[in-house]
Length: 228
Image (cartoon, rainbow, N blue to C red; front, top):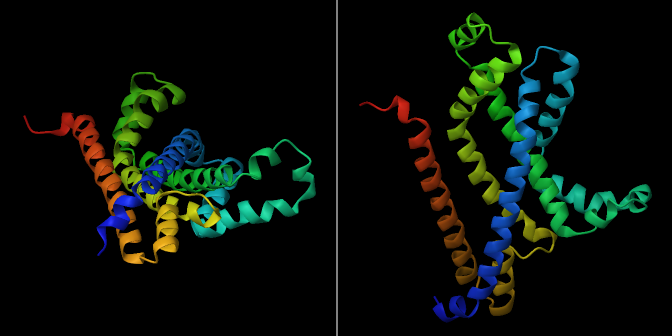
């Protein structure tokens, strides 16, 4: 193993690290902001409300992220009407296409995580809210949603890690993230072991940081369940 290759190429990985964190962080944030209200609507009993949301979730959970990214990056360019709009200024950029695909994908998974948590809300909590005269919206805001988000938190931690690992696909559409940096190093030095082992160490370090952070937050939000 040639450590000189790793040290000489470290700047590629550092640049890729920032891009990976940026793509993952922004897509998770936007996806979560859309997923919360959509999950609430998805838990409704109105078919006309839930059907479009379930269809969206089914499509993006039922197809690989790589296929979704190829469709967005390579497929949308065939529609001339799109090229005539301001949207093409975004979709012609690989960065936006990757961010768009990641956001839609994580939004679909997060909707299901939160919807499941909402539907598993103990019946007693809902009845207690009704007994004190809370409206449906007020009980949702003060009781159901906070309780559901706490229960969904551990599963959402897994989604964050999956999204981090999925972001490695950004390299297939010319973006130089951590995996893209490894490809450059391998192409330049013909050293796949050094190139991809270094990338793996970077991903592992980020994953361990995420796990540590989620454990800290879990300990705080579940403090009321801890034994005194």
